[in-house]
Structures are given as structure tokens and as C-alpha cells.
Length: 399
Image (tube, rainbow, N blue to C red):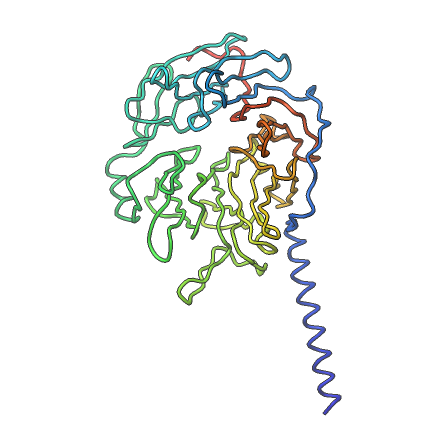
């Protein structure tokens, strides 16, 4: 009897060890770094010689205008009344657009052979939300395209198509094409799909709507409603944050089944137009972490995201950079014990560096350019918030 009992205990230990090893290997195979304590420090040492483009800053002082500064020459370009919430761009030809509240109009700014060009855009009650080539995507009561050359406006979605969406999806509120709201609608780069919030049971969800076939193509439950979903540059899917699964009213709802543990909070999820969901981070497997303010690199190879969590009752913040294909994650410690990031991280035009503005109690805002691989950093403007990284194109026709 004792021998049989010992044999059972021995077999149980073997199975347990195999299970632990399998889970560890599974996470290793995914290439996911789940540790938030082991982070790469952001330290000064990055040279500006290999950096190019214009850094766009929003002024935090009433008596100072926003501006862009050339990293190579130090030349400053005034951008009067620019704010982070309204900056759109750049377009492929190197134009940006923002709401100049003093003019009470949207303005398009470009550089043609080093000369600043400005034009006022008449959008009536609509709101620019993105570029489609050199046409502005306008949101409002309808999704439209504004031709910057001749001023023509083309509707992207007909009234009949709106009716189909409304009949298929329970809208939680009136249509909202942009802004920080759980009800915004974000079109894909090729304008073939929409990402939007839908209400219903068991919870509001992020839905992808196929415009051509007039149907829901994908869904993510309990998705983040504070950050806009971000389309990949190729338009194949969006990133948001959500729990891998959740129990609600005695029932389990699953976003992704990958046999990785879950403590609480949310992870970065990729929702493809083909309906597949990929869990890109697993910080929530070791701590109740919340991931937000996610941004694709221009080439679509990486994602920068802010991670918020609590350790021994103290709030902590990290910058994480995700390799999209391999799901390898590098976590960076912010400079300063109580530092946190203001606004969104901003990618360099070549996808090699991330700029972020850090706030620390008792100190002025400080912007850093961080090498996305090494954490080597360059301090730039103080007292300003980074809102964009612009690569103007020479020989651009005037807007």
C-alpha cells in the first residue's frame, strides 16, 4: 500500500514538473517577456547624428506657441495653436493638419523645398481623422474624403450602408468618428473596414465591420475604451488591449485561448480582419497590469505601449516595445522614481526610436528620444510635450 502511494506521489510530481516546464516553454516559444521588474534603463547616450526629421511639440505655456524643430539643424517652425488632440499626420507627402482654434479652422502645413506652406481647410461640421494618400479622411455624420487639390468631397459610406451597420450592431451612442470615446469609429487605411465599439451582452466590445460584405468580421470583448484602436499600416488588423478571458455571471468568455496564466488587467491584443486574435503581451500573467496608449511603428514591425501596474501599493509605469511578428518584448524603465509618461509615445519616421515626454513630481516636463533596442536616450525639449515626429518631403506641391 505504501509503495503504491509513493508511486502515485512520484507520478504526480513528474506530471506537475512536466506541466510547469510546458507552460514555461510555451511562454518562451511565444517570445514574450512577462517580467516588469527586469527592465532596460533609459539612459542618456544617444547621438543626434543619426536622427532626422522634425519633432513636433505642444506648448504647455500660455505665452508660448507650439512648434516643430529640425533635429539636424535646430531650425524651429512655429505651429501656432497646435494641440495634441487635433494633430493628424503626416501624410505620405509630408503634410500635417491640425485645428487652429484662433483661426477657428483646420490648417494644413507642409514644407516645399524648405519653405513652410499653409492652407486653411473648410470641413464644415466634419472633423479630419486621418490621411488617405493625399486626401483627408473626414468624420462627422458621414465618412468622407476631401481632395486637397480641388476641394471635392466624396462619401465613403452611403446612407444605405449606414442602415445596414445600424441594423446589425447595437450602437452604444450616436456615431463618433474620432476622439477619446468608447464610441469612436476608426476606418482602416484602405477604407475597407471599420473598427468601432458595440454594446450588448456580456459587455461592450471592439468590432471590425467589413464594408464590402456588410458584416461583422471580428470581435474583441471587454476591449479598452480609453485609447483609440490602432490599425496596422497594412490594414490587416487593429491593436487594442483586453483580458485574454474573463468570468462573468458564472460563465467564461474567451478572447484568446493560449494556456498562459492570467492574474488580472489587460494585455495588448491584435484583432485581424480575418477574425483571428493574437495575444501580443502577457504581463497580466504575473501582475494585474493595464496596457494603453499603444502605437504602431511606421513600418508596422513594432508597437510601443505604456504599461501601468502597482507594486506594494505603489503605482509604476513602463514603456514596452513589442516586435509584432516574433512577439519579443523589451521593457524600459522610465527615468526617475516617480516618472510617468504624458500623452502617447511617438515613433521616429524610420521606426528605430521612440520619443516620449516624462513627467516627474516637482520637475518640468522632459522629452527623451529612446533607441527602441538599447534604451540609449537623447534629452530634447524641456517644458513641452512631444506630439509628433514629422518627415517633410521636398518638392511637395502646395496644399
